[in-house]
Image (cartoon, rainbow, N blue to C red; front, side, top):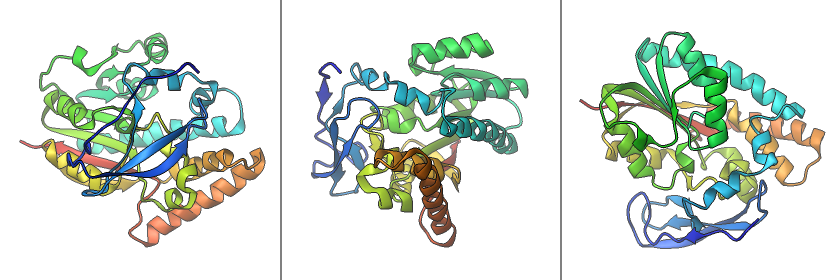
Length: 301
């Protein structure tokens, strides 16, 4: 890979503190094989990738068949299982949203190839997507005839959306506060916000440490805990309604983590699934979160 441009943050993205210390070093197993430094804030304990690729350079770290195979390949058994679970998840997501908003205008921030929005439109919703990847946008338009823009600034800052979803997107963005501010400006009063992010306080995250696949350096720039997300949502004017566990994430992430540790193909499937299920069990019987958490919030009136 060609040399990439980086930037170093001098302040915590959450609280603004300058009291920063090095934390983990995490290898990019997907693309560059380089080590990336994580930084912790001494005041609020938020963790973020630092230094990190700049906004105009980070796209290079998505140009990998290994990265694409996690979601789009027709190849191995893990990819087939992923697609099966994803289709079931789309239906569950619709049922969850319908309990709050049975109809209306939906924005999916980071819509990818548009499968989720395509399903919602078939259920009567008006839908719009934001997706920076050119190839993903093309597939969303080609396969589902969706309206998809490359950046949220391409949408007018009108209070138009009744639901905004961000499925494993916020950890990828360079400025989480500014992103949530822009989302807020485009939501109707009382609209529903749905945000899913990995949780670094889960048992599987602690078990795998720097090998935890959901750290996904350097594509994941922020590494959230529930405390961080609650603070961010409150600061941007959202009222938290509920936090839900995401039970399918731990087995999948644990399988990927085993692969990163060099475990063989079939053993990684068995061992990773077992460890992921154990992580879910810990979340059931303790205050530990699941491997990823889902936040439901409302734009305050």
